[in-house]
Length: 131
Ligand SMILES: [Zn+2]
View 1 (cartoon, helix red, strand yellow):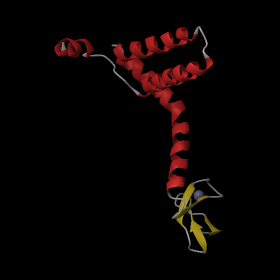
View 2 (cartoon, protein in one colour; view 1 turned 45 degrees about the vertical axis):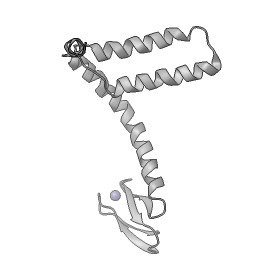
View 3 (cartoon, helix red, strand yellow; view 1 turned 90 degrees about the vertical axis):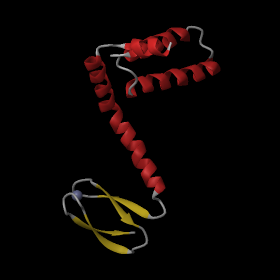
View 4 (spheres, rainbow, N blue to C red; view 1 turned 60 degrees about the vertical axis):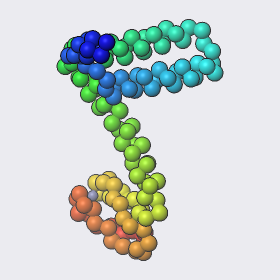
């Protein structure tokens, strides 16, 4: 059985971020539909599942990788926004965040230092701030 599965999956693309995203959409829609009770939702479920399994079992690795890269290009700004908010929340007691007025670089400064001059690490622009 195990050998059969290994043999079947050999040379297949497998799971990736786009596949995971599609499965998360699938689960969210399933939960949402428990509440809404739309009768024809199974068509969307079936399409999502077929799409996921088609991608996982596909032998055209180059094409699946290109699809995933296009997805990651769209998804990266969203992921970075959440990551930024998470870091700001984690450091909220020890650091304060500033934006360089010249180049918009995000700058992290320790809290409780009073009035300071911040030098941008990217463009070396200097500006006053209170931490
Ligand atoms: Zn700057």
